[in-house]
Image (cartoon, rainbow, N blue to C red):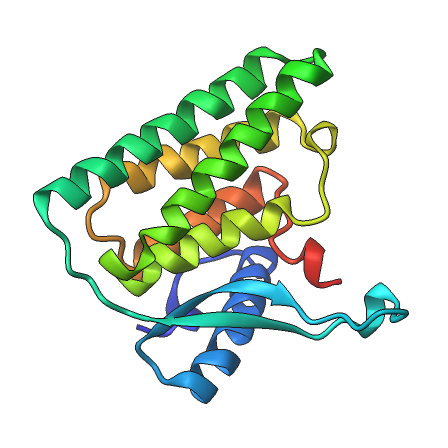
Length: 185
């Protein structure tokens, strides 16, 4: 299903379109059944504007056992707990920082499980990891953290994650003020 046919406002459609353009350009090079993590290939001495962003692609391999589903659900729960601590630690930069570092570590664990999931799962983890690139915890407002948590909660209830689900998650993040392309600019 093409993303251009979904019901979005102009700004939301642009965010979704930009993200998928980056993802599609890499999947065209590596094959349709791949997902990936956004990485930078900056050379020493280059400015941020000279960075070449691409996706580290991996094969789509949805080989889920019941143990894998339970483990993934547990990781999603841990993400929500870390984000709850970040929300509750509003004003306490140390608590918020610790919660975000914990969230980042859990996202990495989810990323390591990507071969057991559908490609949309890997895309979602990629989006969330992209939000944390070159960011510090105090850069995130309570509203942004809540929108990230809302996406995690919705994704944890959806197995498997569909293209429509992914488009919805991007809209939620956009409405919450999360710029999934900040690291690309």
